[in-house]
Length: 429
Image (cartoon, rainbow, N blue to C red; front, side, top):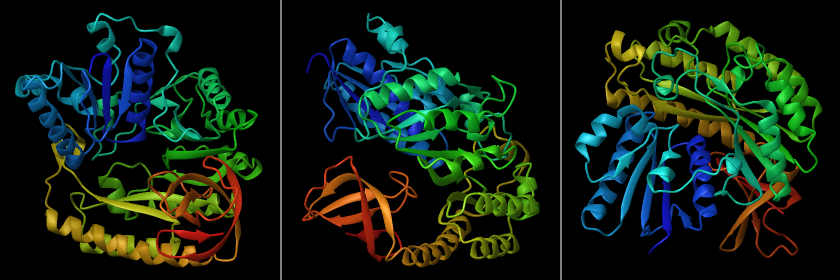
């Protein structure tokens, strides 16, 4: 299949943006480009890898080996690997998997084009071939992270925080609005720090305010804020701007002061309580999404009990949990002994998620009878599937509406009355 490229994206939405940028370049060169196809069989296969934690690395390696075998049997002409895993382990991967034509890092993937004898189109630098439904898109506002959390390999992969110019981001959003995109998920390794490097002050509130001024931007949603150095002026923007969703994704990771210190979070238990109280007071009705890390070295049953009490008291609208992964090169790997067994880590994750499942079910029940603005993402069988402003794609609850409802179109907004709910989803008419 000549002039055909299959791109496979593993990992987070930040990787997805990189894939979309590269796909646009190939399309401009006349290639047929497919993304995450069920049966990739293009002339060229490009795998965009994740290297964040152990399970993600294993998935990336499995995928590379699967296509390395096809490359060896000449079922594909070229196999390229890019992204976080190859940024971190490029030399090791080259030695271990020679069937791959070339490994690229996270920031030099445009060299794939020049290595194929093609020219990178600088005028299309921020144009993307969206892989999401045409009504929403992810907007990456920065790369890298300056934090020194003990467990996290992201700074090793991405380097220090680098904010994109505000005008460049505004121009990208305007361009996507012109193409019919209505909803924007702002993403970064650390939203809170946006602007501190480039403008010498925290500029996320100004950026969000200016983006909300763009005609046609219906929803802006914020992902991956950091609690320390939180830009409190953002809360006024969220409260006053109708098209800024009352939704904040902010990773807290733990509540025990002992664990927060071991994790090198530079934030205390009391500061966490104060931050959440301020957020909820300033933005009534806001839905907070957070993540918790279980099984970090030094964590005891007492620390987990303290975390459980915290979760039951705060009642987060959205919460996920994951088990500690001892990553090479991190502070924890170099300085702590990984003394919590895998069995105990997973048990603690399950215990936290059981508490959250009950909380989520109870919060969803309070929405029955309310009328909420809903965007329709897709149709599945006999139902339309949508989301409220409190729900981000892929990770949050969905709103289910009968496909027999007349006049509904995918990508449009509707007022929907919630008529039922369970732990994960809402049912509406």
